[in-house]
Image 1 (cartoon, one colour):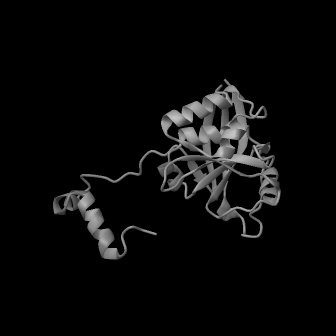
Image 2: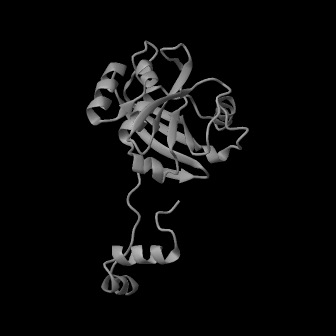
Image 3: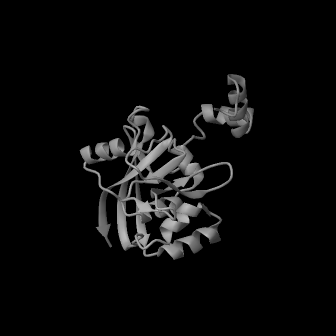
Length: 205
């Protein structure tokens, strides 16, 4: 929902951003222009494309890195990072396709059907570190600009400390930046505002 409740509120906000009457006149005369800020992602037909590069951090190093940056980790996310199944790489550049939840009906927005759609598009499973790389490289504002609340890396599921399979993902919220662990069961359901990260290609540096 917009923070400006009506049309007059929007007009007033634009007026103030431009600096009042003089700024509006300069805009109308073509003396100033309005441009969108540079974006580090592109979107086409409900799919967002980004690029991230691994730097060799182990799971324990990711935990320390995120805690130093003030990025919060759930108990299960931390257990994934400290698992022997977390296998980092170094110098691998991943081209990532994020399928937006809006591409799926509510009944089809489950893990097994999302993976089937990725297979149909010839997309691959990412390394689990991709969840960390997305969280580290993209702010909550950027995730919001993508139209998403969560971005889930659709890697091979890792068992959490309770023995349940899960997936790492970046989430934004009013209480700060998070690295979460999400359900990795084939029947796990998701919301429209979720995005699902798969690999288009990867290149070793």
